[in-house]
Figure 1 (tube, helix red, strand yellow):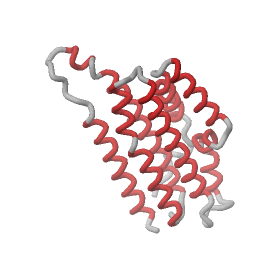
Figure 2: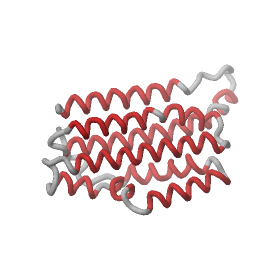
Figure 3: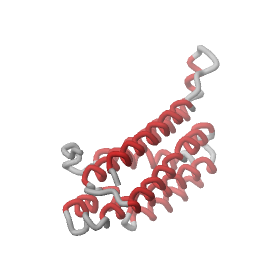
Figure 4: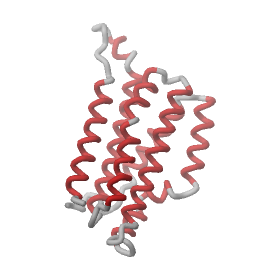
Length: 197
């Protein structure tokens, strides 16, 4: 399958997701600063989700730049990954509107889990494409921090801890996500800014 076409499609979907999220940031009904202050919970949720998409896209781009071929299996798992990400605007909007409610935070956590598992499956599928098995491509993907974290015991443990935390203090869910994404944005492969198509 043409790798460039799959990447172009992916980039288009990601751009649409970001556009939908920013459109949810409503213009205040008043010219007073209180109008913006009332929007701050959504603005924070938007920042977290924007960072979410940015980190995801960067790591996705790195994997696809390494890949020699995109198989049909990888294509469909990539679509599942995009589908999981397309749920982000709804979760972001709900958390932004009700930042102290458990329901929206649990939905955001669900979207994060769904995205994480589909990303892990996508990474593994690229690694196991016949052209990549026992090559530098497979090894480099296996060394990526998201792959190592998501395939370790620490991922389910962090989900359980976050879920418990949300029950007692709902805003903890998106706050933990924010901190995790900040960490992920720095823990990129050392050669990630050197890969090219």
